Image (cartoon, rainbow, N blue to C red; front, side, top):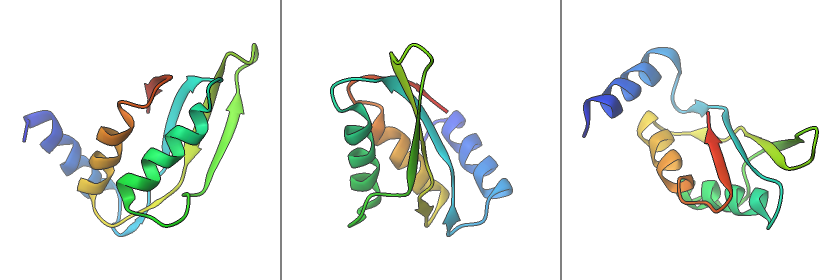
Length: 96
């Protein structure tokens, strides 16, 4: 595991209680079912039966959409697994 990943895991352990909710934010192209692909990738990474709670906010020009997801994570490692899983989602511009 890289030093950066270990630092991030330690920060998660210090600032969040697991299991528990952790808010994820992403920005992507407001086209080609980006939101659906993103939510499906998060659901798959979590091995969840249902979509995690989420909301969307389009940009002023409607070209991009911000997606906020609020799943329950069992561990900080699971947070990194989700970030790894969504990295390849078509249309993803920013992960926060």
